[in-house]
Amino acid sequence: MQVSVETTSQIERRITVQVPAAEIDEAVNTRLKDTAKNVRLNGFRQGRVPMAVVRQRYGHDVRNEVVGEVMRERYVRAITDEGLNPAGYPQIEANVNEAGKDLEFVATMEIYPVVELASIEGVEVERPVVEVTEADVDEMIETLRKQNASWEEVDQAAQEGDQVTIDFQGFIGDEPFEGGSAENHDLVLGSGNFIPGFEEQLIGAKPGDDKEITVTFPEDYQAEQLAGKEATFKVKVHKVSTQALPEIDQEFIQRFGVDDGDKEKFRSEIKKNMTREATQAVDNRVKQQVLEALKKANEIPVPSSLVQQEVDGMKRQAAQQFGLGEEFDVSQLPNELFEEQAKGRVQVGLLLAEVIKLNELDAGDEAIKAKVEELAEQYQDPEQVVSYYMNNDQLKTQVKSAILEEKAVDKLLEQASLKDVEMSYQQALAAAQQQAEQDEEAVEDDEQASA
Image (tube, rainbow, N blue to C red; front, side, top):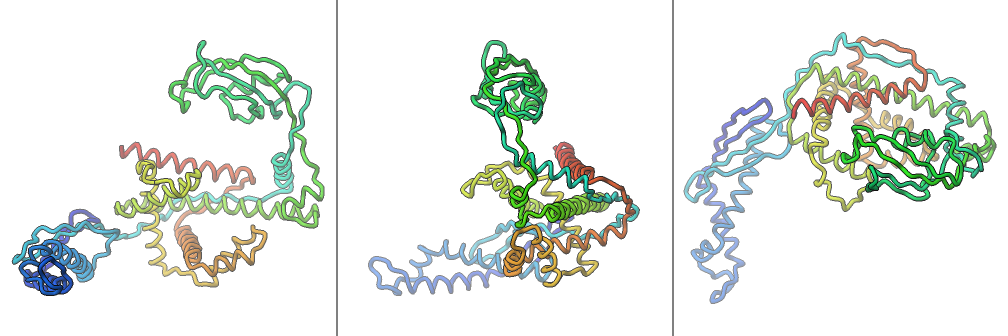
């Protein structure tokens, strides 16, 4: 077997393999003899069909079958001998495939890039320092009360925060437009769920009122035929309801897993959950800054096959998130929606793998169990959660990957310049949300730049 390797790009290789004709012809003849033993043709007993007839009838298919097997086997041998590390499957094509001639085929493949990590030395990383105060706990309890509030119908003018039950129909000029009408629709004034200006004009409305509301659709409105246009809505107000907040009593507290209804224990649990949430927000903000710095310092080529694998995974996640069902064909979702983000994920994954390898990072069962126990604290039956994870190899692998990622980020943080910034609980959550939005904008900018 003769092998030659051509470098066509940083991560693409073109392997040409030649296999002596005698090897292929011998394998084809052996396969044809085996085939002849079981051939049944009219006029011949089983196993007595002349080889010339067998070759004429089955020779083409048998040769293709043998050549396919040889190409796959010799490809594996070639990449092993040449020390190549393929990323994904190759494209294999036979250049010469004729009886009596040496078989020649070409395998085009991508390999994992060689990563020589550049340091992020000196990069400034902001780390929020957050303390959950009693005032934060009070605010969270009020939020929980509002989430569990009931609506009580009242005979009074609607105020901001009240819920109105309305019929409405929208018009552009004198023509009603599609999707612009509803009956018995519940709308909380001040929620921002409707077009800007709509809800404000219902403040002061009473049950039985007929209102005519004029608004202008935003220029970036999703329905292009309505964007930037002035519309009139005819509105009938049926009901006005105000929120009735529940008392913070034993029954209310028990809804949140504090069985004895103890108020101090309830506050303690809320503070613990808020502290966990704040810690996650801080960790995520720090991690995103570190990973962004790592990407900027290490522009590496990314195998398209790995990007496509990530795209496929993101499509499945999107289908689940939007409840499209298992029968939904995710290939209907365009690759372009996910490609840039997938490329960034693959790049980060390759770089973190190199950090893990260089620093010989690892996580054994004890570390995995400790992490699972930490995650299980937020569930009602932590022991059951721990048992479920520790007896599932796939879940254990996922947890191990998360631990190694955390360790890799900590190693990278040693190179960065860490700046502590005091923040309130709400500021920390808002900063984490802002960071996520900035990451999305960066992806969109990359997409526009590459378009």
